[in-house]
Length: 236
Ligand code: URA
Image (cartoon, rainbow, N blue to C red; front, side):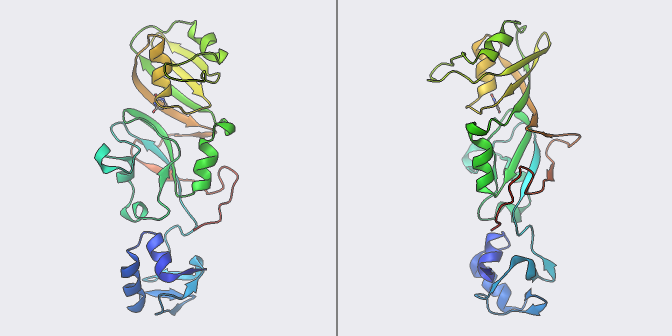
């Protein structure tokens, strides 16, 4: 049960002050009856605004096909971001919608977005070893010796204390490879391949865990059930 003004503000409808005005103006009903007390508590499922059920009151989990050219940051100084693709109401939610891990500005592919912080922690924790598959196009022919090197778990990148966890490299053609990682270090694919003389020219992530983009066009998302990863979050 949540206060009506808090519920509307947290779901991104408007500010808390505006929500009070909306409630006092009779725009909000609880179980079919107009409720003019903005401090009244209600279950989100019982609330309507202008006759409509609330927008995803239990939380959001989105699978986005990130296009290149957008950053995964809420800091506007870093330039256009993936959050700009979302409806304004979702961008105004609190807790905020954030990405589960990040893709570089020039990397495209599968990116999960959620307002469920528990899910962010679970899926980004190295302990859970969620496999992430990347397709890279590189600037030099790929030496087959990279396959056992990456698989060995001994590759130490500059300025790192721990070697990279074993990673599965498939060479698809002279300059194209698929790399499966279970960790998510900063610019990891670009650094692993670049360190071996294969500068990455293009990078795409088609798969994360059991999820794939299928035919989702770049810039679009599809909603996933909140229990996709086996947890049913408590909701806001
Ligand atoms: N590795 C990279 O280098 N970039 C990404 O965006 C993801 C993994």
